Image (cartoon, rainbow, N blue to C red):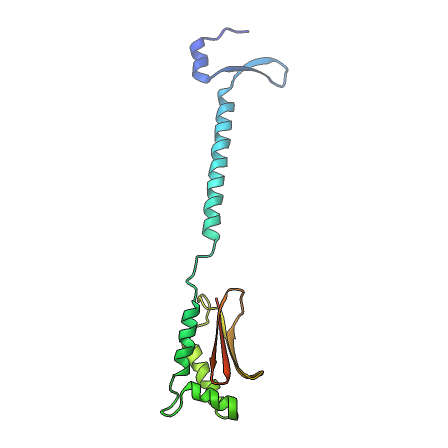
Length: 170
């Protein structure tokens, strides 16, 4: 074996015995092995950091949810909405429930109010809604639009002899 200068080994790292394909023992530096392990550790840490950032970025952003108080206020306001100078929506609900009169006017007016108030479109927070007016086990009017989801808010109000249930899906 050839004697090596100690200063030369300090430059390259600690010597180790390895064999080549001819089964001859040669001196080789451990420094490259240490660098490979360090590189593998850095790659592993970077991969974990990237996975953490991806998990946060792929989560859907929190959207403001509609509160039940907002739904209660909406129904209260709709009941007192003037259709013409004589009738409010509440009056039309009474007529439709008790006498089967003005049901078409009620449906048209409520559809327009819901379309303007609860925008159901692509990218919107509101995915759909359902308005159901019942009276004594009889459905008076059902208006719905959009898709139903598991995330929803619901309110139920009694008006005259009718029960008004309004559900918003988001």
